[in-house]
Length: 388
Ligand SMILES: Cc1ncc(COP(=O)(O)O)c(C=O)c1O
Image (cartoon, rainbow, N blue to C red; front, side, top):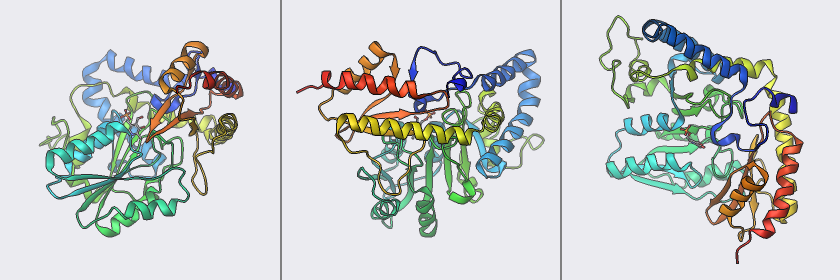
């Protein structure tokens, strides 16, 4: 896929295998982003007062189609962290309530629930989901063992950050709904990497990023909220939408509260339709499949090198981001630094629950030569970065 590499602004000298951290934007989408910024600078008052609310509605329509959700149930936010903060702050948890999650959550979001629980006297409970995951059904059953009559919220990543595992969010959301428990899904890694169908998942709250796998510029996140629970949502930043002017109100407090958060640059979210169009123009579905095959090859080659078992089994799928185990004796920091200093390879080395992992992302700009470079570098470095 070396031809696609020219469509990205990434430094051509870097072996970039870390799309998962912050994404990377293709040039046509970045051009759309800059077009919005220039338009705003030509007439900021008209743009922000008149054009932006209309354009935001138009961009949400496109996103709604992409996620199979109504545009009225989605708001743009700068990132998934903001979206989860909005939900966690709005739910009025109190002493004795429980928030149930897992040991695979992204650290910043884990902090959000720890903070809220500490503040309210609620209890934050993380179920240990062991790797390798043998079956999605067992994960559902195991997480469900943590449910008590006090459970108010289940918080789960759609695709986990440190371990690149797809979680059974649909099954969990269904059971939670039946039990009267709110489901909050962290979809930072999902849209663009897998098909996200919000109607099908039928979740209560879904926080997502479009600046990772959906190829939008940084600053494009969203929050989906089931219509029924929108009255629960409070504005994290109180602004004009609180007591909105009837002349400019959208008619929905959810949208009014979260649309205007003070003056800011909305160009990233307004470029989302361009990112969706780019995926269609370049047949991104087949690009994803090619990336997946390349990633599978990388994982097998690395496991061949280390003699360790791959951490995927059964019906558990990964798509464009996956982990391979590294020997426990490896000094992760030294390995990461030397991969960068000596080979110009950008790839995360993760320490998680006593395990050492390498997390590889494969995007349309990657090719066999990137995987060769990584495997060859690991072959040299792993024996050298082992500490006794
Ligand atoms: C699972 C998960 N959730 C949330 C986030 C936070 O994303 P952001 O920094 O864009 O808010 C990340 C970022 O990598 C993530 O991996």
